[in-house]
Figure 1: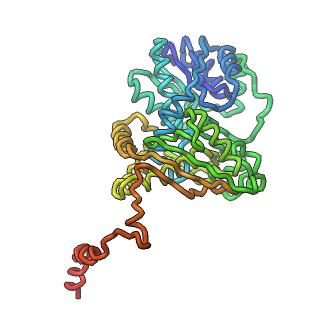
Figure 2 (figure 1 turned 120 degrees about the horizontal axis):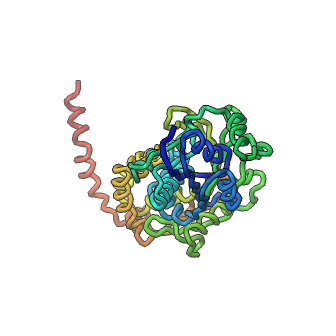
Length: 399
C-alpha cells in the first residue's frame, strides 16, 4: 500500500511511534523514514529517544529544541488572549501541536519528503491538530496516520514491533497516559476514567499536596510588558526561565491542579487531569491587569473573542484565517497592558491582592468617597433620565 517514498515522522520514543517506523516501510511501502522529536521542555533525556529511532529503522533521527519558540510564540500569545478552554484548561498540550506541525513541515521541505506521519489514534484531539496544521502550512504534503488505521491492540502492536527488533517495554511503569511539556502535564486513563473517583496523589508531579505546602503565604509580583510576562519580583526573566521558575514557585503551594470533564472535538467526553501552575497564575494575573488598563467596552468585547480564540486553538485551527484575524485584535488590545500584579500564594490559592500600571485607567479622585471626590454628582440625574427613558416609555405604554 505505497503512499509515499520519504516520510517525516513525529516521534516520541513510545511504542506506537516506534512501531510506526517498520509499519510504514513494510506495510505501506515507504522507502525512508526520518524521525523528529521536539524538545518542549518535557524533561526527558532525548538522546536515547534519538538512538531508539535509528535502531527501529529510521534513516535519520532529529531532535530539535523548540522551548524558546514554544513559550514566546505560543504560550505568551495564549496568555495575551486569556485562553482557557471551557474556562479551565490553559491549553498546555494543544499549544504544542501547531509548533510540532510547523517543524515537521519545515523538515519535510528541507529533506524533500512527500509526506509527514504521526502516531495518533482515532479518538483524540491531537490527530486533528496535526493533520489540519500540516495541511494549512503545506497542502501538498500527504499525511499518514498508521495507528489510526492499523487496528492493532497494544499487545499486538508490541508483538509487531518485536518482529522488527523493537524491544517491548519492560513493564508499564504507570497505568496513566501522561503528556508533559514546559507548560504542564496532562494525565488520563487508569482509575481516572471513572469520574467519581478522586485522583490519587501519586499522579501529580509539579504541584504539592495541600498538606505539604508551606504554612506561611508567599507573595509574588509578576511584571507584564504589552501583555507579555517579563519579570518576577522585579527581576527580568528570559521566557523559558520565567515559566520554569513560576512552575516551581506556584506548584510548591499546591496551585495549578485541574480536574475536569472535558468535551473533546471528536464528540467524546473525557476526564482530564492537568497540572499547569505557571499558566494558571499568569492568565489570571494578566486578566486582572487588563481590568486596570483596558476600557470597559474593549475588556467586555474581548471576552467573547477569547472564547472563540481558545476553541480555535483547542480544535487545531492555529493556522487559520479567523485565528490570524483574532491575533490582530488581541495584539491591538495589548498595547497598554503593562504593569505589575501582586499575588498571594497560600494553600492551593493564588489570590491577586494588588496591581499597578503607568497606563492605569483607575482614577482615585473619581473613585473615592472621601473629600477628594471630583465626580460631578449633579450630572448623574440627567444621565439617569436619558438612560432610563426607553424603559419609562415602555412602562407608560404598557397595560
